[in-house]
Image (tube, rainbow, N blue to C red):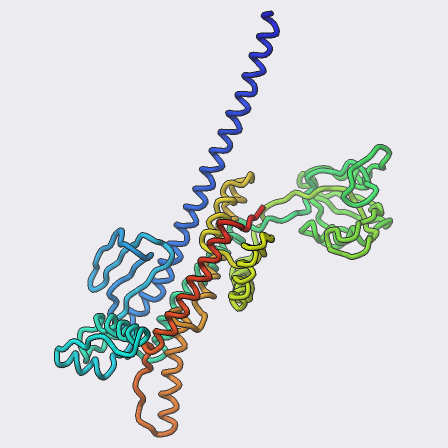
Length: 464
């Protein structure tokens, strides 16, 4: 029959459009996810570039010969030489380096061999001794002669410390700039005292749905309207919803005077908050049920710009939080490895690899939220990564910047002690002897990174 056939045809067409719509949304979400990951990679590359610039600028300022400034590892994608320094980008954007002349002082045997034009050969004594010699040989290639003064190890202690701290400090400064843009430029998402809407009733308990017979809320009886801005309650100025809610909650059954701004005019209203029961564990985490005041309006959520010092303050607070994680990094990585076996949920505040950070960036970019919320999320993530780079590089172990700082300070202590005791000036501390320790640290970092990457692929942390 014609009519039913026509109806079925329309129904099938509707299902087809629904499937197409879902498919389109799915493709858009995938595209946004990829964009989020790409933005994070670009932001990470900028962070690494700034870190290495923090080393490069003082090194050149202090006269050290810098052979290379590279962003990334692996094969070189692009490079250009300007003066004595080669600047370039490599294929794997997971780090970077500058090559400074004379990171280690040459050994006496090598100095004699270099003076005579002979090759020193490979060291005896096994794997680690060979590793030390290879490090010396690579280091010697950066020097043009024994009398070269433009080498790192000849600098005063304070200049070496400045060079090595320059990288982490650049990450800290970049994080401060990002947090300042986030908090003082975009603003902090805050529930304000502007009325968005009024409640429909006084519920039987806090958070319950309205039922037939529930009384109207005090906000309606008081004459509040959407768009009103509550300026004060009983003479106490309020600028955030939390301030207004704190007064209302302790004023059940008591008449309150509300001063509101309505279209530029100030009005005075009176309202008596109703008493409702807040279940245990709701909002403030209280163990027992409590009776609280209920006025009955929902606040407008806006981005409120914070004072200019909010960015540096947030950066300092994040440094403390990240330092707490770094201090327990081996334990937390072990806990993460356990979740790989047991399938338990990971600690959302635990460490992440670059892969995990990329997943979160993709989720933020693809989230069903206003664009300003997504931009804020990506900025916050990049700022947090720079805080992590700052704290991590201060760990006093080679090959990290903190390890080089410790070597420089130890050299300075030896020199001061020699002066105080009237002894000859000691030879520079030979950090090349610590190359085996560096090797062990690198292997440990690679192992922890592999565990985190695997966990981020198999058992990822999600912001949702």
